Length: 190
Image (cartoon, rainbow, N blue to C red; front, side, top):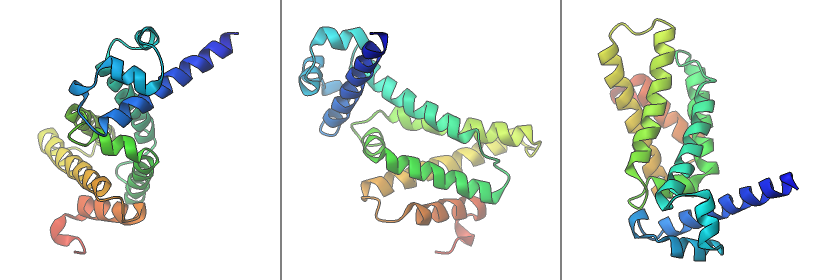
């Protein structure tokens, strides 16, 4: 009986998340009502409120799930090794592709711009921690700004790639991002 409840609870949350993402495709979170969300998910309002406090809480849960998955992935890589940096960038792009609709919507004008900021903070935290741990950083302030520049540029490239329909492969996008990140724009093969 306990497993059945857990399965139903997971299903309800999944349906609510999917319904919110569908609605966010057409309008911002501030324009989405609980009534509309429940109608889209085909559940009643009391069921919604047994899981989430409001539509913002639901959106936050979706974002947190993605950030946690990214955090776990980023822990596996050595940021000094160029091959591992390439593998990490490729893995992240494959992850973005696997959840492309979520990322496309969350990075769009209907999503939460705070989400982009949280993704940048998570990535920067991992990079700075790794470089600090390996005693690579000689100037923390300079390293912080350089890593922020690389990360925000990468996120904007990924956002545009999603908007343009992901015509380039993840391998090509990984090459572009890592080449510019490692060598700078002047030394990239343009």
